[in-house]
Length: 161
Image (cartoon, rainbow, N blue to C red; front, side):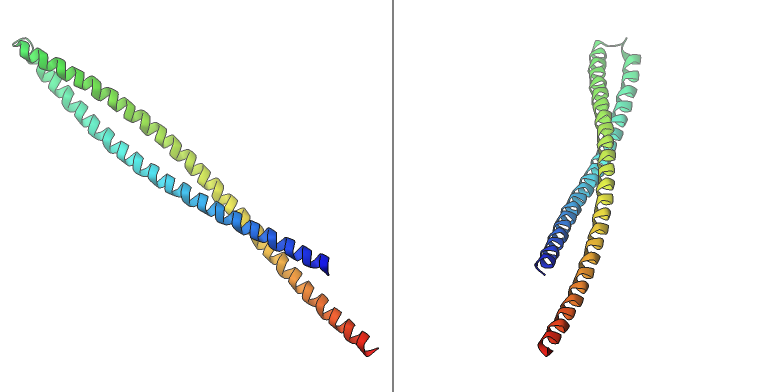
């Protein structure tokens, strides 16, 4: 009887541990989903920034074209052209760094998505295991009740003797 109680206690402890682990994994999944959402926002922001930088670059290139046609007429225009060239160089560098950040963020997003899917599968496995453990627990409770009723009948028969 004590062994049965110990086994039931052991099964309960395993079920509680499985529940705690499932809760922990659900929290991890939520955190990863939040991280994915944050990365999505970051990607959108970087795409917008990239678009603005591209527009700025096109504007600057148009201005350089205009400045080149007027360069022969005035030294001041030559200075403005140099400044525009520097601005274009800076914009190109900024565009390249934005593209690099976008690629890296996209890569990180994909990795986080894979991790989230992995944890979702893990949670499903643990939920299945928990269901099996609960089913076994119910079976053990039923067997315990049957054994208890048999024991009571046996004790009643002993008392009759």
